[in-house]
Length: 339
Image (cartoon, rainbow, N blue to C red; front, top):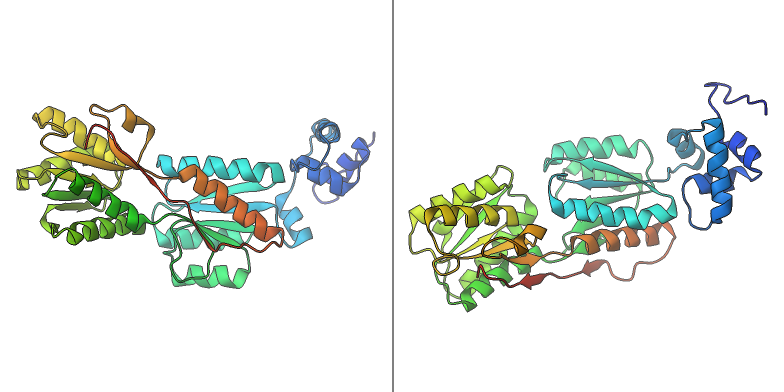
């Protein structure tokens, strides 16, 4: 076969792949994007033709031709947090059969950095965007509104807003932690947090409300650190609050890694958990079922959030009406030995 390639680049074209495999360019495009409606044998034939020619898709050209790319943008605040890794995996599982490419933007809990990502990604004309939470700059909100690109918000519920959201009540999760510790007979209750992003502060508000409901408010037993959450930081903050008040008998941590650090530090200091201080974490990371003692934690539906958010976005792309604007997937208190 004589190959001419693109007139401008000399690279193999989609039309050549289609001719070699004996299908239309549209079918070739769908096969290479992994669209599930293309018969497996035909898709394999197209992939073989592409491999023979050394064809590589040009997403920019594809977006220009259709006014929309076949890409979905997912903006998350961290790639080091297991919460978002599980969510991303679930999003990929939903998007892959539809032949949609997932573009990941990590804005490191910085709304200005997220604004830049939104500006850059919108230039690629994505067909949809999955956003984490609702806090962003005014410029970001204006760009998203002007773009007309369908959006779904993850991890939080939208309150009075009409925006589509999939998540759970961070506030109620914090209040549930307070109630559990109080039901265990604890009365001097503290809160340890890091990163201090909007969802952490919603948990804090819920925990405070739970204490206030029981007449046990103790703001002096809070330790809020703006730096990233870590095991080392959890141990250090635990030592600080215990040194401040030795009558402390219960703690809620905004993340499990902080709680893990506190359990290790308690062992070093000879503080019995839960006899002296009961502990409750958040997110129920895999290691929490294996600490000594095993950590009581609030299990969050991180994979389910990713899956449901992706499905809600696909429904919009298919022109379907999403019947529930706010999908509350709830949370589960996993009671173990630490409380």
